[in-house]
Amino acid sequence: MSDRKKELAIVVGCGTLGSRVANEIYDTGANVIVIDRNPDAFQRLGSTFGGLTITGDSCDLDVLMKADVEHASTLIAVTEFENNNIFVGQAAKVLFGVKNVIVRVVDKTKEAIYKDLGIRSICLAELSANAVLDFYKGGSGE
Image 1 (cartoon, rainbow, N blue to C red):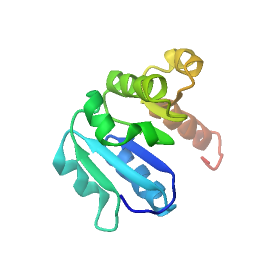
Image 2 (image 1 turned 60 degrees about the horizontal axis):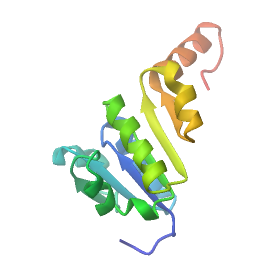
Image 3 (image 1 turned 90 degrees about the vertical axis):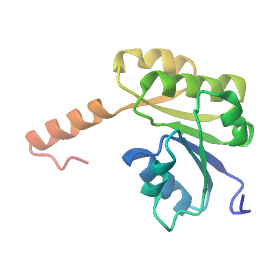
Image 4 (image 1 turned 45 degrees about the vertical axis):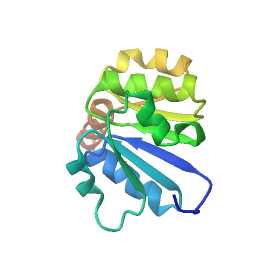
């Protein structure tokens, strides 16, 4: 891994959201490792991404350890599988002591559970609905 900043961010899931987040964080100067089951998904990162990629199942603790999770300052789980995101987020927080954990969720009603664990959750449906309603009411959507 390069000796950029000491900050290490792990992004789990290299879909449209994960690849964008990984690139944006990499552009801040942080070290970034992206994990995805599908090696073809890493093409979304583009040629300017200089972080590392790991092909594997993020629910496998060995894969997380290969990503150096015990030294990560941030883990962001944004796969399309809510249960995987939650498991990985809990493992990062509880087993490996990652301070900043963010997970993509579908079921907004479970947010209190994640908050009690110190895990931040983001619900894309909720964010989208809020933006649409803001546009509907004549707002800027920001």
